[in-house]
Image 1 (cartoon, each protein chain N blue to C red):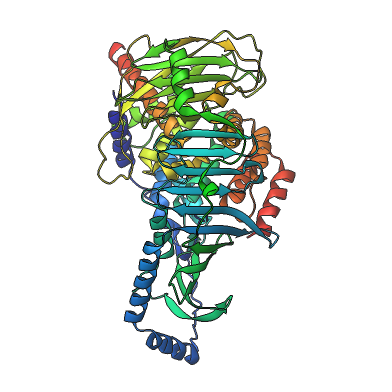
Image 2: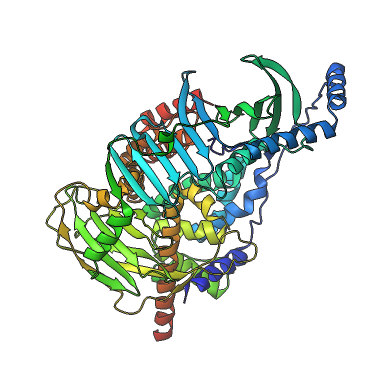
Length: 467
Length: 163
């Protein structure tokens, strides 16, 4: 049986079991609702509809869009209102045609700058004083989207269309002596206000308010800025890792795979001081088959959490993939080998009615277990993390390690331990973000299962305070 | 910047997702009666107009917890019947019963992921939310689940032929 047949069997099963034959009996409230609409409100709405006929809104938005498109450069600073009512500076972005600089200030322990220019992307990581250079079209390159940054800004600022019934364009108080007007509109869960210069039709500020969770983001804009030359240059005296050199060097020094199957080769395998096993692998470039680890066996009688995985590359569709297998409990460090099986699949055609693609797999031939010799790495991370620019992922590593360990513990019924880890993950988020709630809810489920009423009720009270 | 939050202004009747919860419960428990009990409990625990945008995932989450409780009780008290299989009183096709047998042989994670994806019909993103995993983790789980299902299915058919 191949994997397409698996999905077909399961879908047939779904149809075979059908639906429930029982339906609940609802006792609907017969209390009548009376909605009173003040006469004044109707009058105001009518007045507003008359005040700006559609053609005025359309013309204003068109001028606004044209002004954005004609801008030769821009600078934006983004602020976020935190739980304590103070503004945190999150991002600064600077753009001229062909060049882009983004500075990220939050979280405080991951301050970084990204510079895109010519055909390269440069990432400077302040916390580790390192700069990583990669080709601009290699992965991963965050912040990049299709099109020029000015198009991205334009599409974000022009979410309202001229036939949007919530759109309002009205006078506003001068800003720093400049005459301005206000553009505002509503979207589900969101309200937006832009203050726009009457002289240039370019935005000066933008504010977004979100309903649930409550968030307020603010942007300041400047357009047609003359940036100093250094804005798009590397200015910090950090150690530079140029992936255009280090990745080929790594591949050259690992040209003979430790183990391979169907074009997928293990380049390096090591055991680190915390008992984790790291596998670096690569598929033959240009292969259309995608391969992923399926099962993994490390030390005997040791449970490993689902792997954390990252990748680095200097060319599209040719990544070096890194998998980290962490033991759920501390383990001995004399392990010499590990083994794994692989799954290979080719992207299939979309199945009608499903938004995701269905993958068909190739059956792994007999003898499909890869036995891999391990070298000992006397540190917490393999040394190639630095040379391959993988330190970008250190914050995600901590998160995925915790999440995967908690999931593994929960699957083994060690609910109290899992709950503690989920709660620890939850503590990294604030109430303005959905993750504050989802991880706490996960921890509550574990505490309930562990009959730990004290911790479960404590977290419930925390959640209730924010809802 | 904002992350999608589940509350919506317009309410939805949980009955809309009754069958999804039933199918999920049926695949997990293998019993029509138990699955209908679970589905009814879930629906009746919610108001007639629910303002959660992710209501289906939320209801599946409630069902998961109820099923976990029920399975713990069953494991403590079940009497093993002939061949170690539970008694079936409903009329499923042979193939559908085989699917249930194979699903029971998978790991909990794999069974969950496959059930949510193919039996309930969730997208991978919804499965990730329901299982509180990253999408990459769910992709990997589905991949392994499909491979395990295929292996166990082939093994089951071999056993049946041989026996």
